[in-house]
Length: 207
Image 1 (tube, rainbow, N blue to C red):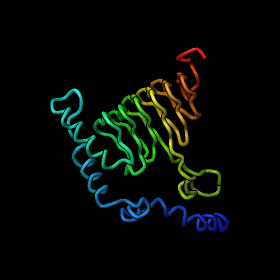
Image 2: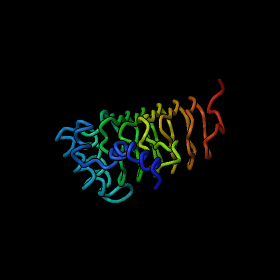
Image 3: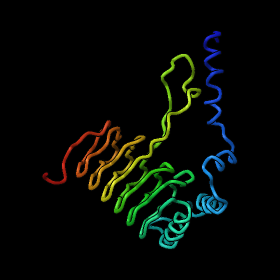
Image 4: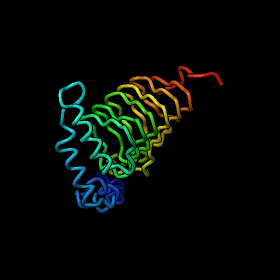
């Protein structure tokens, strides 16, 4: 490694260390209460592994998951559905509106805002973080990350299976994200988008 590259690595060492935080560092940074830590641990260690639709016992398991999430999330609306095998980090700033759902094997960043009446297919990924890569002289893992930008999902939205919604995106009210889409730009109200990158493929009503 050349001297200039070595200096750049040393300069970015402090940024790189933010990715090697201990559990204590995470708790401190997100100001997590002991009760929230307890409920989150109970969710991931037990409730997240319990039966899901259409297996026997799925109704009681779903109610248990919903009860835990109401104590974990910043806001958890009424009549929501929380399926199994999901990941929402600590959930500390996650908001889930009335009658909305997080489906099986979804990965939802812990600061996502989800409106009312949102349907979500399985294996949806919603991301609020990214990674710096501008400096070609040092490994990308040492370049740190830009500030988090939460995804905001409006009301009455349908997000199809295996869709990916990237950092800082707003998905408008009454819109549809087709299965397998990669959403890289904001989605207007009443729009139907699909593809990689996602583009408008339809409008749900005439303006």
